[in-house]
Amino acid sequence: MDDEVLKELAYVVSSKYRVKSLIHLDNTVQTPTTLSEIAGMKPSLVSRALKEMEGHGIVECISDDDAKKARPYLITPLGEAILDMIAEDSGLNDLFDVE
Image (cartoon, rainbow, N blue to C red):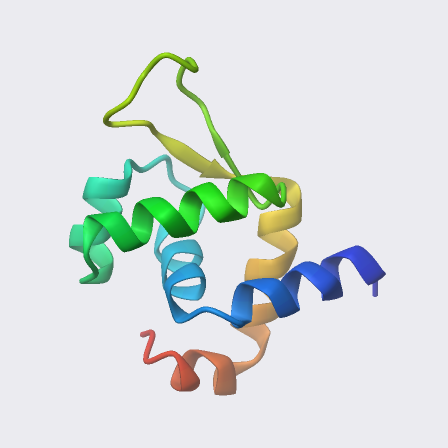
């Protein structure tokens, strides 16, 4: 197992907002507003979680830098590896109340 993936997994699971955002983003392109509706969280919390994970290379914003609203995000290969690890551990899903 790659040390970077483990390090970033620890980073993601240290916040229920990052975990829920990543799980509900899955392999789709979503905006923070749409993702917040799906995940049942406040848009500001989802937006912050996505921006934080973008800084770690876990998700990527695919709009131009000038866009302030409706910025779509997708999961990077690193994010997919983390998501796979979360999916393999059903205890993490239970811990963060994710279906």
